[in-house]
Image (cartoon, rainbow, N blue to C red; front, top):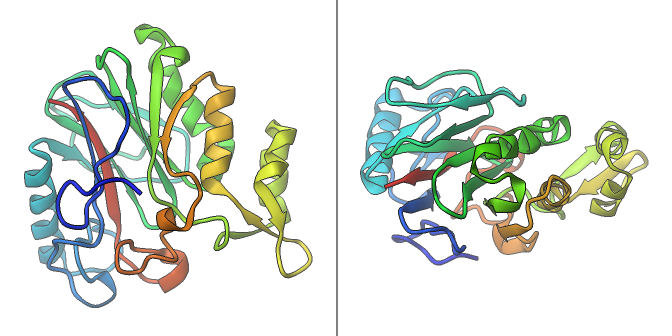
Length: 254
C-alpha cells in the first residue's frame, strides 16, 4: 500500500515527472454520516447534498486544483477537459494538458487508473469497472497520449478496487474478456458455485495496459491491502454495503 499524503489518504508511489501530482482519497476527513460515513464525494448515492458539498470542497482544497467530476456510465468515452468544462459530463475517462485541472474518477469497487507521460505534458484518468474495461476504456485513454510519444511513453497507477477474493462474476464476464484476449482466463479462478468465477480486476487491467504497450505500471497488485471490500475503515464498497459513498482518485498538472 502507498504512503499517506495526509491521515488516511493515498499518495501514489510512482516515477511521475515533476509537476504532475496525484492523490487518492479514502473515507477519512469528511462530514457524511451513516453508510456514507466520512468523505463521500458522490452526489448520486442518496447522501445529504450539503454534506457532499462540504466533502467536495475539502477534497479540492487538499488537491489545490479543481477536480472535474464525471457522470460515469461504464462506457469508453474519453472527455478532454479544459477550464470551461463543468462537472457532470457523461464519460468514463478524461484527459487534459491544462494546469490546475484534476482528472478525477469516483469509485466504490471499480478500478481508478491514473496516467501521465514521462515528460508530464498530459494527464488522464479512467474508470475501469468490468464493462468499461472489457470494452476498451483503458486503451481509449492510452490513445490520448499519441501526441506525447505513444503508449511506450506512458505510465499508469492503479488505485484500490474490489479484490480477487471478493469479486464474484458470472460466465458472461469471463466470456467478455476472453473474446478480446484468451490470456484473460489467467485472471479468473472458479467460484464456489457452477457458472461463477472470482475475477482479478486489477490483474485484468494490467494485462490490457501491457497489451496496449504501457510497461510502466504501478499501484494495485491485487493484494488484500488494495481491496475495497476487505478494508471497510478506509474504502467505500458498493458490493459490500449495497448503499455506500464514493472515494476518488485524481491527477493534475501543477
